[in-house]
Length: 144
Image 1 (cartoon, rainbow, N blue to C red):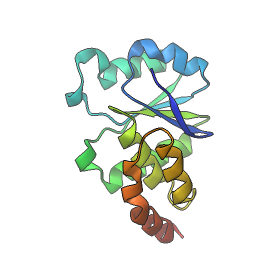
Image 2 (cartoon, rainbow, N blue to C red; image 1 turned 90 degrees about the vertical axis):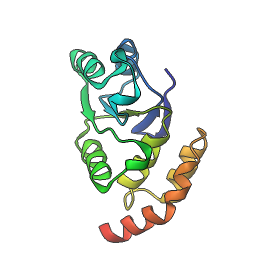
Image 3 (cartoon, rainbow, N blue to C red; image 1 turned 60 degrees about the horizontal axis):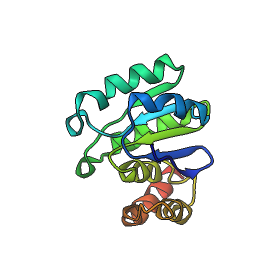
């Protein structure tokens, strides 16, 4: 498991397994968000298996999967709602952490500075988020 913090209350990770949940809880995370569709992984890494482990450990689990090319406003809104409802730090995962960094940037547009989010993601090798700078700025304006 490779947790990469993007802010004080949000981190991303490549694919996790049910066996990673105790370490995630021990690290202080209270919510786990899945941004990876089940069709991309085997049965042991599918959402239901990780949800069961997370909930058994007392963690909140949110299923918000999307393929990279299928990111929608609904995914952004769902990620934002999950972040708003979290009682503590959030860990989101996908294949590499890239999707989870992008959807975070879009969900937090208007709350956090786009350049700060882009720089935080880039420190961990997630450079694709920079392509969404204009979208983050537009969302920030829209959200007032």
